[in-house]
Image (cartoon, rainbow, N blue to C red; front, top):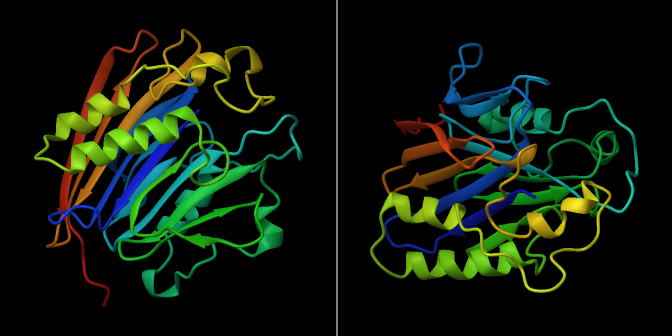
Length: 256
């Protein structure tokens, strides 16, 4: 189960900090974080199966990240990849971006999905399991594979540790320490879902280790007061070993 934690206006030096874990099958081909050769303004990892991405930012300050919405049964069979929602958002013109990803009818083409999207100043959460997008408030917000700020262990525990980190001087590695935390939930881990049901309890920690499915990457995005971005991604193998680390530092470009 994926995790996205957003700190908006929660630190005096960094108006926006976003940290995230991506859970996926280890067999799914993936390209690590980089600027894309076919979309040079987009900084993201890439799903080499469907062509989209799970977390990305462009040089003009548009951001998006996606998680699946877990349900007891699959409500709709779909050939549409949810990662394309992120890509479509990032490759549009910033001046044409608003608070909707697509019209509601188009969003229903996808299996259950959550998307955090917007620009560096204003972020939104949308899902095809809610009627309207909701603006991400100031403070610390968490999203996994259900509703925004759903009180699952990895959200409540992650938000508390995230808040503690931001209350003191921190190193970049401190965020990765949080994202690699394997503290499990006590009792029932999450609401039951039809997605890998036998692994539901094992997926309760922030970092999920498994031979077939688990945390594939952790990403940290820091935006400072000068609109300078530090974007770092660590990729992991089935034994939770670090396969590589990719780092991008760039200045956001003003919208002309």
